Length: 328
Image (cartoon, rainbow, N blue to C red):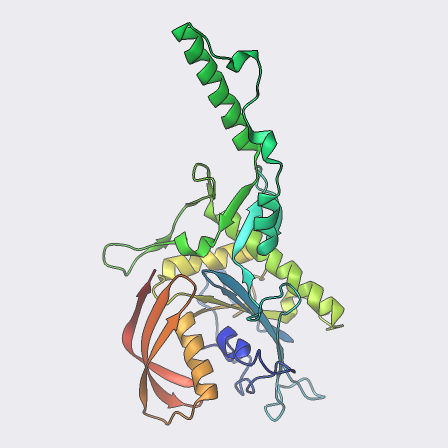
């Protein structure tokens, strides 16, 4: 389990300093542990900042933690990590921005969140109305009328192809379950809000990840957080539903590499963690659970519900009792 989770980071959003519980005492993997990636030996890095992303069905949350080190550059377990939530990108009380993205017809990124819907709505709708010209005038000739209809349809299709593509709450339709629920996968294409056009899921998600990266690095610059090595100084935590397969998680990692979010040669540069596990850690940080106790966790989001059953093994440690389930 990741030593810090998005859910536990966001659980303190109501506090003025946005601080949380200290992170686990081992923020970096042992130098002897190797990655299972086929690229060979991976670099082990002392990350300066941890960024956690929660792509929710309705809203997307973003938080970051500054890892405490002593004067010798070693992790200092006696210090409490500085943990914050991203509050500048929206005015919502939960600090979550809408999981909507707007792309141009050629795939260029335009906007994310509430701005995506606003810009899509504010397009001059007159540009997509039928032209009132002689070619569309009624005709007593059946063949001429058919030609007029065909011409109008072609014009509307051409205008539609030039129109921006809005993907609302796109996480809701990302995952396709298999017959046995054990080997589902992320769908190849997403249908945009016009209900007609589709676009590769990979490109939609890569664009979203690039926006997240740009947003958090803008925060780092404003807060004067020094990251001499750029993305190599940042570890990323990305939450996914508990029902997602390893195949789907592998795609998410590949897209993170394509979005230049992570370096494929750095060990644990991206930690993909289950949403109920993160929620479970958050619950343990706020409730007096005892070792050995069991509980059922219901994570009711904006469009999906995950149910998990865990047993407390120790501080910020739990064991899965039953395989989690969930869906829309």
